Length: 528
Ligand code: HEM
Image 1 (cartoon, rainbow, N blue to C red):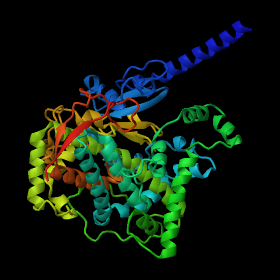
Image 2 (image 1 turned 45 degrees about the vertical axis):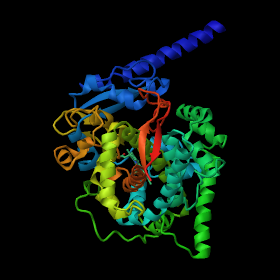
Image 3 (image 1 turned 90 degrees about the horizontal axis):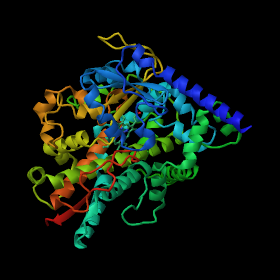
Image 4 (image 1 turned 60 degrees about the vertical axis):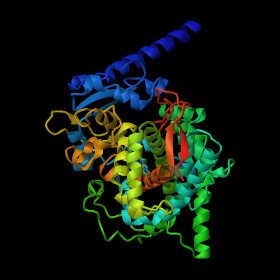
């Protein structure tokens, strides 16, 4: 019997091996250079083995592929075209967006679709939605992220920034170096909780905060989820889980955020109060009552490229979509912004000349150090903008911009047709470190983003927020939040490197948003 079982397993393994080898001929038969796959994981085994972070993995393709506009990889048996070239990226993300509306194929999103409320909430999220559903969501909620609306968020962000300064003051008083992501993640969490949920997450003041506990659970993958995902990929796996009535997403945490948003909405309805935060704006948006900004910034290329010619269907959404969108704003905005700020402070601590130049700009724009920094002052700080951009180039929290072809697409100037259903990943990481676009790319230098440098470069060679109609919805919010915190920190403190940072820094292979394994520390010295 044992021999038969072993023979059966051996035959099945051989069949799978043969199937993979057959699948792995896809790119070579089309003349596309391929990163050699290895059985069973394919071309990016570190995704599974966690031997290095995906940012490092994709940067490591540079040597082999730097002169190519695109190349092929295999993710297990799946085929993915990876794009290296800014002109082609621009076509995919903006010019020919109509072929690449989806981020992932509809099939991926459907894997999570059960009748459980938490699954409905997660499959209704903008980041995951596909086709018409995404178009309706995006065109409904885009008007609340315009520059005019962001100005109104300033009061809430200023409030959380004050808490951040108090927390750093406490570290200075205690003569303690501190970990940057921990500190700035609290700021980012409190800001998004205040604006998108209308609650105080108490990240700085309450170590038992339920909001923080459940939010951090959302970012943690569990073994049970991995098992459920593997089962769902098997033939009849989804039907099996369905018959057992198993939800695919985190029920307790999702229900907690559902209750928080619904309670905020109920309270506002009953007390007839308005805070003009993102919750109020989302409620206006589903009723079709958000006015567009009268003034449009004609110089804002990101905004122009993001234009989506679609009128949302009236009455399409109910309050559940506000819950889904509040959660997506937290998921998309918390870690990314906290990480960016942590890297920026770390780089400034290591580059005192850049730090001094920034401080001089802040003092020149704001004058009196006691006056709160306002929205207009932030817009005048060009060097601050350069520093944030360089941080996002040098330490991109997200290295790959994903799209899925919704119809066959012939690459202009090439014979290759990207077939309907194919995944296309744009390797932002490789572009950010390509000397063709950035001289001395391995040097942290905010002058990579002077007006002249930007004018001489293809804008699609800088993709920390993606680009086009599906680019980051919260970019303006993130930039405002990051700039206000950084300006307040640099005005008040000199930042010094800390011996607690383990150099050279190494990315944590388990981190979803790229962050370092052993933390980034600084010592703050109060200036006044
Ligand atoms: C420094 C901080 C941030 C970075 C680096 C970042 C980066 C990104 C990237 C790379 C994408 C994919 C874009 C694409 O596929 O073209 C994205 C999408 C998105 N981001 Fe951000 N993000 C940040 C902050 C935020 C914040 C604060 C919010 C909300 C308040 C937000 C909301 C979103 C949403 C909703 C999407 C999905 C858009 C869609 O599918 O239509 N992000 N972000």
